Amino acid sequence: MFEQFSRGYYLGRLYVEPRRDGAAAMCRDQHERVNQQLYASGDGVERTDLPLVMKLGSRHFPVHGDERVPADTLAVPDDVLESANVRNPPSLREVFLAKADYAARLLSVTDATSALPDSAV
Image (cartoon, rainbow, N blue to C red):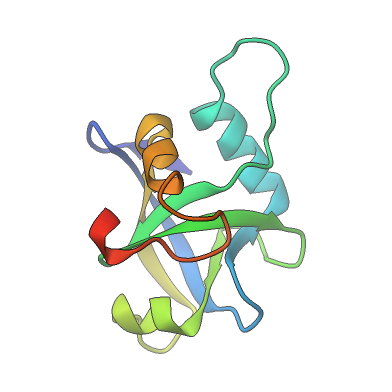
């Protein structure tokens, strides 16, 4: 789903669609799998429900798992769609996933439910 892109990001392609009820989300099963494969350290039992940090356009935001979101889909609030210039969703788009250490730094500047401030970009 995601492949190595740079020192700070993985790159993936997901269908991006609007989400009317708050925080960005993706399929719960895929969220847990990505969390385990790319964010876990491999030391003992680890949580797989922590938010992933994704970037669409110039916006970073936390992404949670939700069983209502279809596989291979990223559901985001309207303001993220607008700032990323996504027209006529759902739209297949390149999405960046921050690597674990970078994601931890970004999440430390906000709570895990809101969009990250522009200064974190």
